[in-house]
Each structure stands twice: as structure tokens, then as C-alpha cells.
Amino acid sequence: MEDTTGTPMDKEPTPMAFTQDLYNEIQTKLDYLNNVVQEHKAHITGLKGIIAGLPSAKVEPKLPDAPSCNGDRKSELLLLAKCRMKFHGQPSLFPDKPTKIIYTGICLEGAPFAWFSPVNDKWVKDNNPPPELVTFETFATELTTLYRDPHITITAERKI
Image (tube, rainbow, N blue to C red; front, side):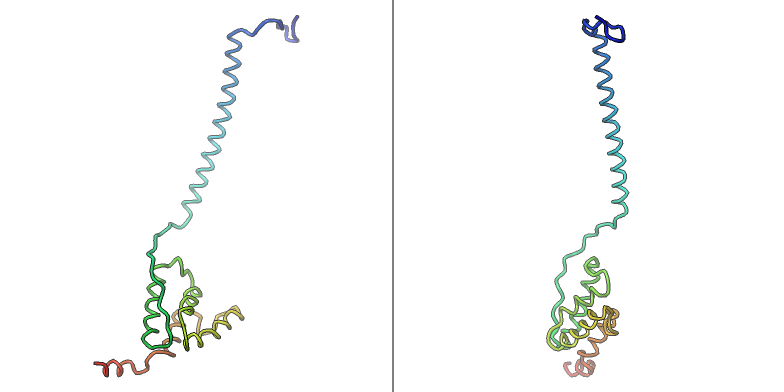
């Protein structure tokens, strides 16, 4: 009995034909795996490009929080100095002006907070900073004007 190609059907494939079939099957799988490897390499190259585009992770020191300010003239200067150091030492935590102002605002207590709170509420309500909160330096100047010793030189001389 013969199949449609004229090959006898009752005969076993020759060892050479079996080996050729096995070789073809292995070659097909190898080609598939090579394609998978190439796809993965392309994906890895794309990820490397994404990683290269990310900002470099800079290790920032852990700095203590700024002290609170209750209206005492000395505490206001200390607060502003320590806030500026924290902003400089940990820039990723304070990427913009509003973050700096809000951080400093939460350090205020007593009379300074009583001044800051309604100004901040106006900012939140209007979604536009009032003149006192346009920049951190404007905020610091306003706070200093309100709570700094107006006679700092005379006070210092008196202490000496």
C-alpha cells in the first residue's frame, strides 16, 4: 500500500529521515527562541533609554524638621534660617514655592499662625496666592516685619 506521494506506508522512516525531521524540529524551535531573545533585547534597550532619561537619584541627607515659631522674635529668625537649610539640603521635598511656604506655615504657632492661617485660607479659596505668599522670600519678609525686633541693634547693645 502506498500514500499519495508514492511512498510505501507500511515501512518505518529511515534513521536518516528521522534524524532530518528531528533536526528540522529543533531548528524551528531555535529560530523561535532567537526571535524571543531579539524581542527581549529590543525591550531591554527601550528600558535602558527610559532609565537614562530619568533624573539621577541623588541621596539627600536626613535633616530634622524646622522648629516651631510662636512669635518670639528669636524663634522667627531661627525658623527661617532652618527652613532655608532644609530646603537647600532636601530639594526633592520642596520642589516649588508653595511647598516651602506651606511647610514653614505649619511650623507657626500662636500669633504668627493666627496671621498666616487666614492668608493661607484666602490662597486656597482663590487658588491664587495673596501678595504675602507669592514667593517664600516675600513670605519670610512679611513674617520678619511682623515679628522681628524693630530695635534689634539697640537690644543687642543693651545685652552687651
